[in-house]
Image (tube, rainbow, N blue to C red; front, top):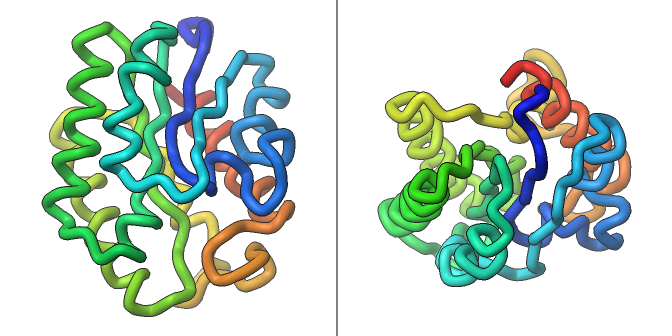
Length: 183
């Protein structure tokens, strides 16, 4: 873990910490737990394309050692094709690698809208395959939201059908801490 000098987490409202503030986000909790500076670049409502459009400004400009890339929930709500989301994520990874920034992919948490979750599952599948092919680390936020042997996400982690409550953000932080410690 000594190679972690500064991390930037880029994403949407779930990275930001909505409906709370960034001080309640998984990003802040991980930073506190690990004693590593992690800059929260989550923007409420952002799609993967919007993340890509601000990637140079929000990530490259700061030259962190690592970047956690997590998006897709708003793409699913907008019914964006999986291939487009894949291309946006791939472009962010490639841009990070050009600047010797180590990318880490975050798998989006489950959505309690069945249609959106169906689309998100395609995104996650693409991200898992891409990460495996590129030997990238993955933070599996998705799996953390299920009780063992359950096919439905645990409702006690949500403020609404998509956003975590404080307990949900703590669960996300725990998964991220464990993953980062093992990188």
